[in-house]
Length: 519
Image (cartoon, rainbow, N blue to C red; front, side):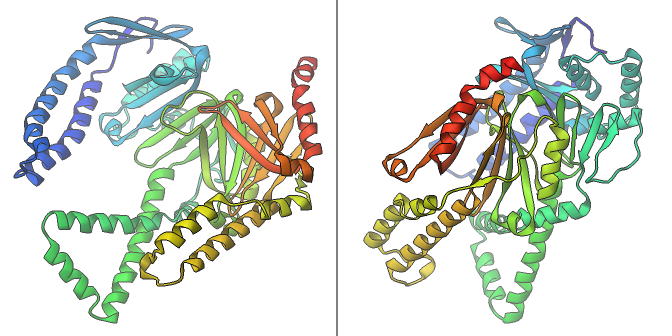
C-alpha cells in the first residue's frame, strides 16, 4: 500500500543495479583481460587498472544510492529526494505528467519487479521521473494516482495478495488485472470491454508470422553471420574460416544446402525477433487514455492521454502497399528524450483495420473521404523541377567512374538508372498526394514509393505555413506546412497544392480561435 509518507526504494533495487553492473562489466573484463591481454596499447594498459577500480567504486556506491534516495507519493504530486552529498528534492505534479511507461526486463522478471517512468512536458533530464524497481502492484497504484483515479482499498489489498502469490517471472500488469477480473477470450481483431478498458487488437500467431516476413527481419541473419565470421578472424581462426568457404564452394550441392540452411535460419531468426518485440501485444483504451503493451520477454507498457494526441499517421511502405498492410502511429506531445516524437502502435495492420482503430480509440477523430487530387500542372512542375541529388551523384560518377560490385558499366548507365528512379518517385508522389479539410479536421496524404496519411484536428495544429516560389506563383500552386506540438515539433509538408486551397487553409486556421470560443 502506498501512503502519503516518505518511502525508500525496494531493496531489490540494489540487486537490480548489481546485475546491471555485472552485465556491463563482464564484457569489458573479457575484452581487457582475455582478448587484449597481450596488448601494449596505452588504452588497454591503463584500462586494466581503471576498470577494476571503477567496478569497485560502483559496487560501493549502489547501497549508498539506495539509502540516500527516497520518494514521497502525495495526493497531487510526487516528491523525489536525494540526500547523499547535497540535498535535493524534485516535485512533479500529477497534472504535468503526460505519459506513463512501464518496462519489465528479464532482470525485473527474475526478481519479481517492474520499472515505471512518468513523462512530463519539461525538457532534458528533468522531463521524466523513473522508478527503476517497483512492485507491479505499487506501479499500478502510482499510475492510478496519476490518472486521478480512486481505487477501492479492498481491491488494492486483494491485488497485492495476488501478486505476492505469483511467481517472480509473472509480472505482467495485464495478467494481474485478469486474475482479479477473469475475462473470456476474444477475437484479436475485435474489441471487448474489460471494465473500463476496451481491448482493440491482439495479434494472432498468423499475424506474428506475417509481420516477421513483411518486416524482413529474416535478413538479420546476414549481419549476424558476418559478425560471427569477423569475430572468428579476430580470434585467429582465419584458416578455419577460409577452409569453410572452400568446402561450401566445392560443389553445387554444398552451395544449395548452405543457402537453404541460411534461408531457414533467417526465417526462424525473423520470427523470433518479431515475437520478441510484438509477442503478448495488446492495444487497448479507456475513456481518457490509450494503453499499449508489447514484448514477449521484456515487456513495455505505455499509457498516453488521448488529449495529448496531436495527429494520426497511417504509413505504408512499398512492401506493405503490395500486401494491403499499414502502420498506425500517433504524434504525441511531451518530452521523449532519445525517442521519436511519433509512437508506433502496430506496424502490420490491414489498411481498413487501421482506419477502424482510429475511429474506435479516438472517437473525436474521423478519417475524411473523397480527398482532392493535385492539379495536372503539379505533375509537370514536379517532373521538370531540378534534382540536386541526381546532379551531385552524376558529377561524382563522371569524375570517379566507380565500378560498384565489380560491375564494369559506363558511368552514364548508373546516372540514367538513378534518373529513372527519381522520375518514377515523383510520378508516384503526384498520384499519392491528396488533401482535404472540413470545419474540424485537416487530412493530407503524401509519399513516393511509400505513402503516409496525416490526420489532425484544427485545435492541435499550432502553426500553418504557406509558401510559393516564383514558378509556383506562375503555375497557381503553393506548398503548405502543418506543425504539431511534439518533441521536436512535427512538420507535415504538402507541395504543389492549388493556391486556392492554400488560401482556404489560411482562413480555416485563422478562424480557429473564434470558432473554438463559439463552440
